[in-house]
Image (cartoon, rainbow, N blue to C red; front, side):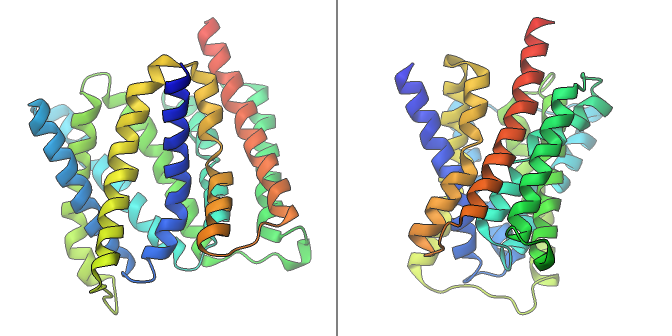
Length: 293
């Protein structure tokens, strides 16, 4: 049990650090090209893993359209909007906005999956929104200024929630590894023309260190960490694992301080506590009700 929690915590640290990693990479690569390159190395990793496990299966025609949609919306647009947003958005604020994904997922599950929507979820949502307001305004309502990059991060959050819902539906009929592999292949193929159409100018680093960092973060964040999480999540209580995942914004804060020398403010801490508290209230109550039913 201790080993499982330790490995899950490492995954959260990796995912929380991804906001800072993305902020660093976007300085040397243009956003759509960076999306294409990251997806390329993620696909190569997944292909290698699937080949090792001899885990290739055909997708039914009825599910093919859903996989294509997932690849475009849940993979390409999700990754692309993330890097476009990080060009100007603060990584800590971005992490806090993405931390509210479980709340949006709950509302989408209510609409499309007919899951219950509780009063606790509504209260948690309001608390989280108040927390986002504190962070965006830095505690001063007169200084309200919505960075354009944060709007792209909101799109990232929306597409991430859509991806969770679609994956949940598809995983009832298709192995999750197959869903991940095929949707990432679709996302990569779609990204190729857009990398040359949208990025003006096209920026690409020629430094070996930058390429090593790009490949390493792509494989570790979206490949190895995800596999470790999926393999160990079965050994721990679901509600406790969910709380662990909500630590990502705090990891982003600490990594921003270490790598970007960005100080942590009291308003950010207050906003973070409100956001994470609201998310925990929403998701924990919903899971508890589902387990009772």
